[in-house]
Length: 438
Image 1 (cartoon, one colour):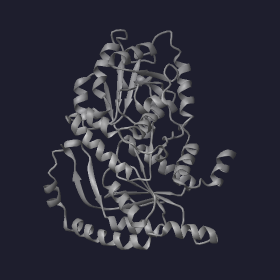
Image 2: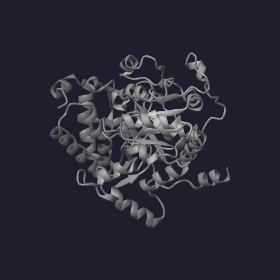
Image 3: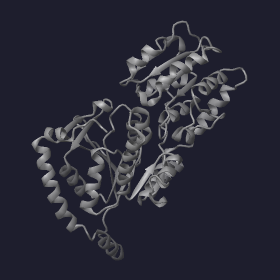
Image 4: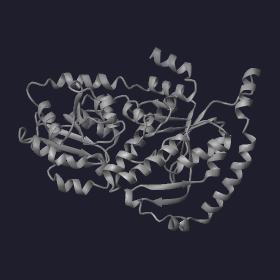
């Protein structure tokens, strides 16, 4: 199914990895005995009114500094955690990252390249180092946000310290596999059953859209409804110092009235970016001077440039550069079919840029059709929506204001408060007071 030779992978593992596995197994068994009565001791401590274990969560992730939507959203959460000093810390496995408040870093003891599946690298962390950090940090619950090695580490800590363990689901892997691999239905069902077995090992699963929640609690995955929590990512405040880009600075011969589409994402086939040439071609039948600007990088960048050679490709952009583009261009186009949320939609909305996207999972929980943008079904209806947006009958200023209002619904305080509540943690009341006063 995967074209990965497991025997070769095991043979390639270094001695530190193998010896760490042996040590981890023995430590798991001994520590599990020590903590098997954790719940009883905590209840007893509550009755005494002292010596109760601290209530803090350690969030494990394989991606925080990568250039993708998941890392952007997690970085936003880390920034909010630091700002409000929430009882949450992140831990990542990275070769170059530097520890900082609310962020621990462990170095990988091995790297596994997954070139058949993109340009991603799996970093194998030192399990015993993570266990030490968990113990010394006084944590009593775990959150894992990726299905890679960190998921196994999270379940290891769950068994080792007898603590609740939660999963934060960012990617619909079944949809991803269906769109990016040649696996047949029978093979995809095998993957689904493996994922069901994995998710059932966690005490709760956080999802970013209602469709995913219904799928996890439905007949295919069969998770109990009380174990699946609906959450969201929050918007970052708009930087009022950023000025809108001038279209003429990007596009030769353009002026303020030139219709310009904009997309910012990781340039991979999974994002549906190869629908863009046909969308633009169809829309140009009514809008012959329609232009498109593309921001981002990824494995499909060169192929996309060949497919739409007259587009403006900017490469990877900083947050400030993106803000300037959102403010100065017209309509965000997002042809991804399996994004579980759509951080870029909220970024566009924050700066008053409406969007057109497919009527799928995460985007349809964010975008209000005909109000803050358009939900479409295929390439043709997306092209029609683009034409409609630039027509004389559409009040683009009203739609831009509606987009800003929609983004305002995704503020950090209520989202993080509900997230902590579902984890069984308390949101600091002094933070709420500061936000209310402000």
